[in-house]
Every structure is written in structure tokens, then in C-alpha cells.
Length: 167
Image (tube, rainbow, N blue to C red; front, side, top):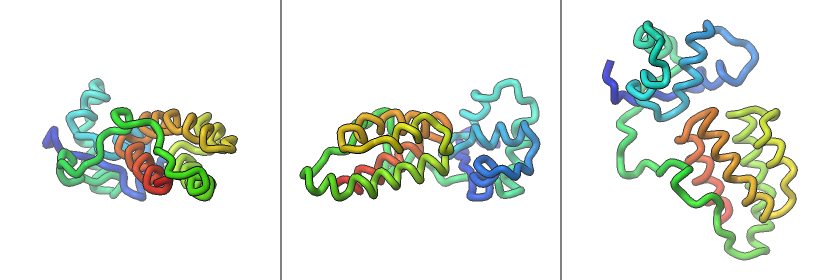
């Protein structure tokens, strides 16, 4: 298998991870969890060096539709990882930010809920946010949790959408 091939969970794979009805064996689920979005097969091999049948299990997950091979993710249009960018969106005006804060916070809560669940400390802290300062203070933790649990790509996706909504 090509070590540079980028792998990503499909909707079916996301449902397997985040829903209660698990259909995969534990080792396959571990691989699925490790894949997230935007990981190369080579990086996966480094994450799981003791998995002798990794290539066969990745092929199983590909064939059964839990993961997919992505196009080249190293394109210049690809967003930078969340950790390398500023931790919070800049506010345009106080009135504009206040109008967008609740809908943006709701978006963040839905994103966190789908990827890390409602029992996550990041979800709990975001649900307690009442103002822009609190929102901006909690965002970096949310990005880190999503990057760790799901993928850096999804953390960057969340960050981009929050910046767009707050602009």
C-alpha cells in the first residue's frame, strides 16, 4: 500500500465511532479511530507499529466503506493545522459579535457533540460560555480536543467555520 495515501473516515465510519451500535471488532475500531481525516497510511503505520495485519485491516475498512482514500492532501489550498494559527477569531464590532456569538457557540457545540460527545470537558466548558471573552478563552481547548480525538483537519475545519461566522 502507498505510504503517502491519505485516509479519511466516511459517514459510515463516523457513525461507527460515535453511535452506540458497534459492528466492527475492537482492532478495526482502533484503526478507524486513529484514521480520523487526513492521515497518511505511513503515519498510521507509525501510530500502530505493532499491528502486523494493519494493511489488511485498512483494506477491509476501505472495502466495507468505513474509510476512504483521499486525493493528495498536500495541496497549497489545504488549511494549515489548527495549532499553527491564531487561537480565536477577531471580533468585528461588539454588536455584530454579540449577534453572532450564540449561533456560533451553537455551531461549536454541535461540532463538539458530533466528534467528541457531550461528556467532553470541552463541550461542558463551551456550553457554559456566556460572553465573547469566555468563548475566545474556550476555543483553543476545543480545537485541541478535536485535533486529538478526531483529526487536525477537522479542528482546522471547525476553526475556519467559526472565524467565518464571527467575521
